[in-house]
Each structure stands twice: as structure tokens, then as C-alpha cells.
Image (cartoon, rainbow, N blue to C red; front, side, top):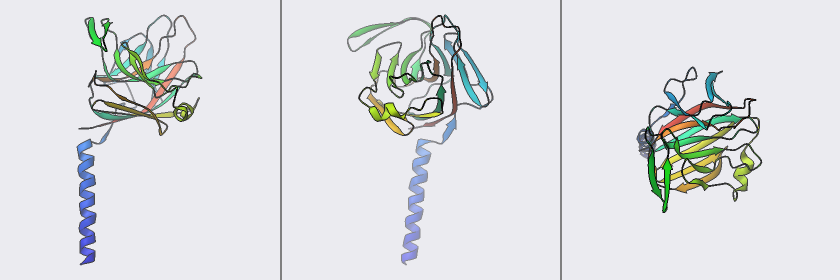
Length: 226
């Protein structure tokens, strides 16, 4: 009798776990490891290519911030990405971001923001290999600027490792955005301005600098949430 009851409990637990997994969806690769099918470049003219199963972003002079964007939008999801930037190159991962063919004016927090045609804007999860070390902070690209920096989060600032692969985990659920850097909680923000949009990989503009800098990404995967 006890064995039968124990078996029923195990079955119930497995059913609940499988139901939760089905509700939240399976992990899906964002990048096929071979080419940039499913991605669209917007903004500047930085070079994007595939090399050894990695996406490589490379700077070019005299061009603004460049973005390699998913062809489809995402709403609620968990995103995991491994990345490795060269020292001196700021970068970031856009989530719930947008880009319009026509100029747009928006009112946010009592301020007016004019967004030019073709300007990528939205939430950016910072990649910052400088001494400031704000990787994992949340920046509003093309609109309000910093929303959550890491100046008061010393453990997250110390989590970044220069010259090796690092991992960002980004959770967007309703009006909540949370980030982790190499497993360390980095930033948390409640903000409902943009509930959905594309995911993008940024190569920051470098002005007149002609010596190219690179940032690499690999193992990009997303789990869509209800």
C-alpha cells in the first residue's frame, strides 16, 4: 500500500514538472552556428560574420552603433548568451527593442524623446569590459539612458572575467527584467514601456578608430514564457 502511494506521488510530481516545462516552453537556439539566417542588421555598418560556430561583430570607423537583430519579436522569455569582448569595446544585448521606418516622438516620465527613423531603441543589457564593469546593467538605448547601473552591486561588477567567455542570463516577464552575469544577480527593473520587441547584438561605434575591435557571441538560446 505504501509503495503504491509512493509511486502515485512520483507520477504526480513528474506530471507537474512536465506541465510546467510545457507551459514555459523548451529552449530554442537563436543561432544555427552556420550563418546569419533569421537575423537582420540595423543601424551602423559594423561587420558581422560567423566563425567557428560563433557570431563575430567587428568595428569599422565612422559609423554609429550597429545591431544584428532577430527577424521576429519576443515578449516574455529567458535568454542565455555566452560572450567575449575585446578590451576597449563596449557592447550590449538588446531585448524588447524596436526600429521604425519613420521618425517617432514618445513621452516618457514627463520628457519628450524624438527617435529618428532607423534608430534601434529599447532595453540594452550592457557589456562593459572597462574598469567601470557595469556588464549586466540595464540601459535604455536611444531613449532614456541608464535605468539600472551596477555602481552599488560590487559582486556583479567582480563577476566579469576579461579575455574569456562570460554568460549573461536575461529574464523578461511582464514588466520585470532581471539579469545575471556568470550566475551572479546583476540588475532588476520594473518598466512596462516596451512589452515586446526583437533581440539584438550590439557593436558600439568607435568614432575614427581604424584598428578593428571584436566581440564574439555563442550558445545563444531562448525559452519563451507564457
